[in-house]
Image 1 (spheres, rainbow, N blue to C red):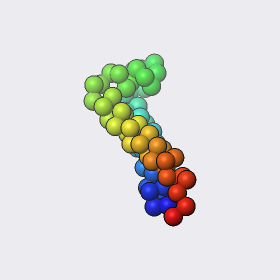
Image 2: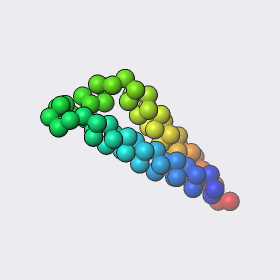
Image 3: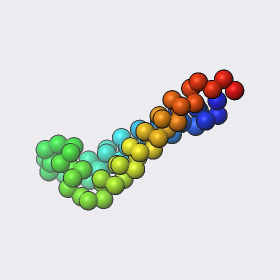
Image 4: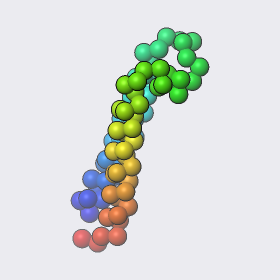
Length: 73
């Protein structure tokens, strides 16, 4: 049960961090400076590794929670 809760916390934390990072990246660009969110994220090279890291955390948490869903302990 503890690993299930840890997995859910990792999943939710990864999603929150990912969306916050995207919002912070969008606030750096001046209004009208980019056409889409993907354009802003590609404009700087440092965004892609951070986004992949947060996505990896959320996927790992989801897999951990799904694997430990059957445990009755």
